[in-house]
Image 1 (cartoon, one colour):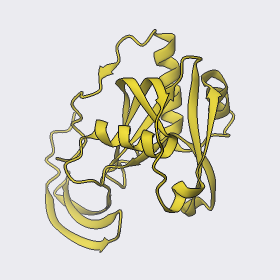
Image 2: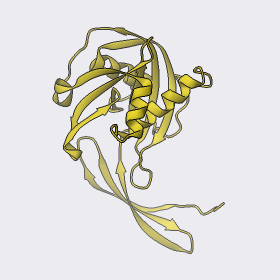
Image 3: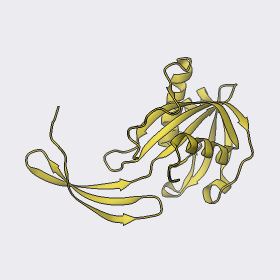
Length: 199
């Protein structure tokens, strides 16, 4: 195991947008060298696998401009509200996008989306005991968002067939399938520590 200290020698903000920023870091590398690393700075995100009592999972479909098409996804959103705990963000997104609340919440899976280029960290929650609440429709993509309940087995088959491509959705559905098969044992509490999330 390498013990090299990858110190940041210089760091410059190259771009700052509405959601992301781009930082240029020069990092010390083994062999007394250095290397430039371009980092997409991201606030992080949460997603929700909402399971109903019939074993169905809720999928939302919305337009995603970078890929120029609509994708099937989990209810999800950015961690862009200052000081808002991740669990509260997930609960808010489930309410806003699907008009649902849930009695039981667990951490399902944590992931770093593409650590070679971004610090984006995602936490996916499992929500059970769902019930309908008033939906506060937001703007932009959410105005045209559609909702569908799908059998979890069918959703997993669609992942494996390449029909569901959104990374958070793929990871969440596969993890949920495993959790169901394990009888929901071993799931972390909803407020479990999340070391990857920036304070």
